Length: 235
Image (cartoon, rainbow, N blue to C red; front, side, top):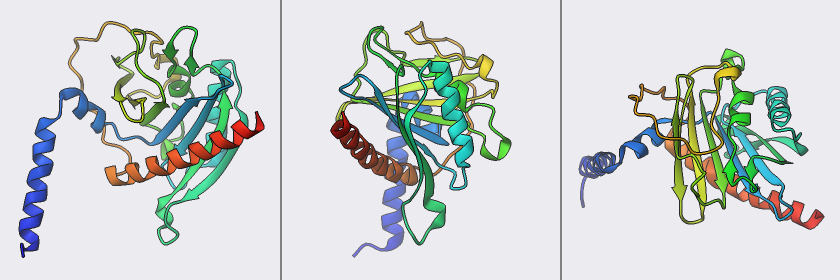
């Protein structure tokens, strides 16, 4: 039977090999650790169903509510049916408790222009008090596939954003690192632009370890499906 050290050595070598096999875009994507996540899916009524998760166990509910209202003002569509609640993954581990919000809104997925809009989210979540400052954001557009208008990568002095296309189930996930907290400078183009040739600066490592993020993602998909089912019954 192999000893523990041998198993650990093989595991570490496998991890290192996987890291070397990653493309620069994959490494950049994985280096951006989210402090808050969005899962967005278009409903049959054309409304956008949104689920938000703040990873800080003590994230204030009133702050998240204000941020979502600010996002609605920027979109020109205020959140409808807004529900905030605490989700606990493990009763024995209070630190694995997350603040969630579910609601419907219009305009994040613009079907007429065939674009996905991030600017209202980035601007609304910037500038929070230091204890709850958001430096990394994940935005998953579930069920979406890329077209010629969809921005794959964008970088400015204020932010870096990169998309990862998911094949099964289909989706496009953006990871965004906020370098500045002034909403006025956090502009993200709605439509595709030529990629920047400037050298990418180093990015802050924020947010939880990868295994935590995977667990939250699984829980988020389940909760999102429940919200979808309830709204579908109502409609």
